[in-house]
Length: 213
Image 1 (cartoon, rainbow, N blue to C red):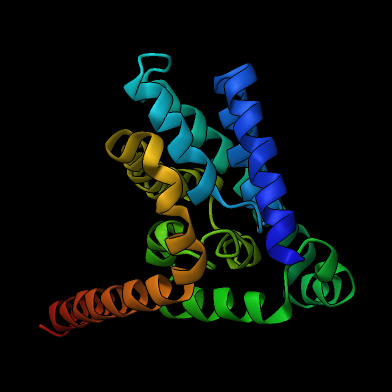
Image 2 (cartoon, rainbow, N blue to C red; image 1 turned 135 degrees about the vertical axis):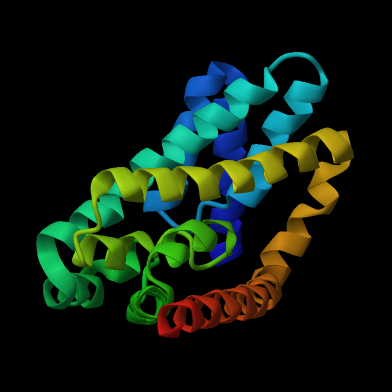
């Protein structure tokens, strides 16, 4: 049932991109950040196919996807900023099921942010299951909007470029790789999480060593 809904939403997203072009990419990217089950992995590569066919411009596709994601990220950032941790958590407990956001999702994002702060906003934008929710704790602590925008924009641009190139490389066969995203999100997230943790650990260790000298 759940995957049937996701597939239907994906079909609508594909039709939207094909019919209205760049505004459709913007809208799909925006909605993916607000309504988390919308899978950018199954939609944005389609824009890459259109790039390979000469119908879309690569830079404009990535730009539209990035701006849409940034604007969408403002929603959770704004809610976190306005409501604070306790009120937002109460909101998710009551209403989260309607937008497929659970309290554990919030917990995961908070844990990442508490450990890695600014780096979390940047790197989590390319990690499945986490990228949308990392905006919440950034709002809690009232991270400067410009810094949040820059970090979110960089991470999102990297992710969007990757997805677009998948479409360019795989062409009409890109649908053969979308099930791998759906079934492998948790695995991918785990692998990336390990890589990120090792990287951040070394970064923090280096910073502390510098401060102690």
